[in-house]
Amino acid sequence: MTATFLVPAIAAAVLLCAEALTGPRRDPAWLAGVGIAAVAIAAVVVLAATAAVGRSVALTVAGAAAAVAAVGLLRFLLRRSLGR
Amino acid sequence: MRASPTRKLQLYVAAAAVGSVAGLALGLPQLVALAAPFAVYVAVGLVLTRRPELTVEVTVARRRALENEPVPGCVTLTARSAVDGLQLELALGAGVVVAGVPLSWPRRLAAGGLCEVEFELRASRWGAYDLGSLRARATDRFGLIRYELSGVTLGRLRALPSRETLRLLLAPLELQATTGSRTARDRGEGIEFAENRPFVSGDRLRRINWRVTARRGTPYVSERHPERNADVILFLDTFAEAEGTGGGGTLALAVRAATSLAAAYLARKDRVGAVGFGGTLIGVRPRLGLEQLYRIIDALLGSEVVFSYAHKDVSFVPRRMLPPKALIIGISPLLDDRYINALLDLRARGFDLTVVEVSPEPFAEAGAGRSGELAYRLWMLQREALRTRLRELGAPVARWRDDEPLQVPLAATSEVKRMLRRPLAG
Image (cartoon, rainbow over all chains, first blue to last red; front, side, top):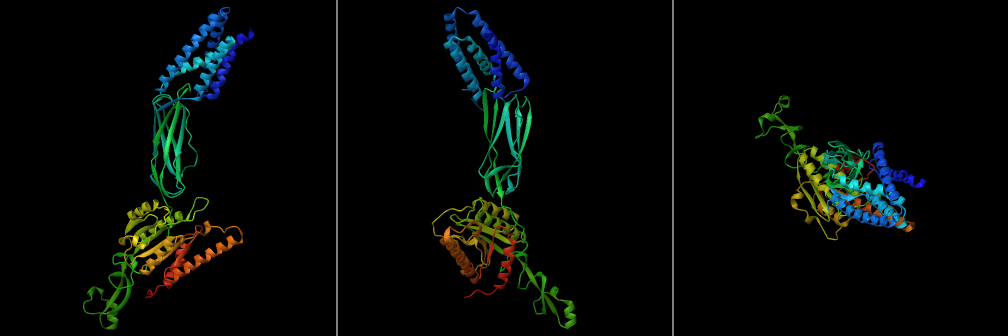
């Protein structure tokens, strides 16, 4: 349980490491903003997962639907950004 | 600007996908929580990304420079929107290198920012060069999309051969009828005093030397040497060259020698022409002036050794390139029989010929073993025999090596040429 509540911090740390390695922006203000956002997003996911305990079928279906939607969104955004 | 995904985008998408799929498959929402920030980062980044408005201009200060002379240039970057992850890359043409410090530029440009990046280029050898192009890369502020601007060309550079100041030149045997700065041996209107002689009918009264007339009691006139110029033809061998391992070669040296000679003769108001005699024929008719120097250099910049089996002799050279009474200076490593035969032919036709031998010996080494050494010595003897033969025919040979000034062999040959001043046999 303790590990579950540490997940937002771990998620923020992983994203910050990736951000610092890949750049292009490495200034403290940017990294702080990214870290806080990562903590918030991961916390929302953890809370949603905690609330959905005992409804694993519904969670799986919602997760699969979210994954398909994410792929579609990604394709749309990539086309828009690359101008193709 | 061409857009393409960065490795960062690929990495983040992969992290989000792997985390989500693994979370769903293993029933671990913690993995989904780890992946979610990556997915949101990508989504937000792609929604907010804007194509950077970047203008890149490259200026090169000069289009002509001496070989190895640094040519300054400047890249002007104007950003109308903020630009992140800026990278500049010079894709230089063959033979062109960045001189001095490498390019340095800011990684980020604010909106409305202007940046000037200075650099220096140099060409390591004379010739006409395509300087290459500049490629500018930038990313959006999230670093997910790379924008590339290519095709900013730097234009062309003509690297002129470096030249040596020559004070003592080979004097031509005969001068032309046009006015120049050489004192002719015959008598006429001029400045240089020749002799006094008794007045004869038809002499101009202004030429009477009154002092001598008063001393001798009869009218005497002063004779003078007229000032004339000469025609000089630089006859360059482009049949063959000896190349060194370091990139130098006899052709590069020959063009430098030709440029030095052309500049020196043109400075003395002689008419100078050039003939590149080889696989392809290059010809510049003899003319006067500084413009002619650049005409010759431009023609020589395109000279290269074109391998050819074709038989060629002097008859391939247009007649107007070889005017009568011209001093022909052959510049050659004396490696190709066709060129050597052309020299002999020119001499046989009565041209005043001198050969500047761009020595190929520094570029050649004796082969391994005794037979290799023997072959090398035989080759040296053959070359010495050729020099002797040319000298006996009245065409002295100035041996020039890269490690000494061109003036040294020219001065020595000038003395030899003075001794050889005698009518041609036959």
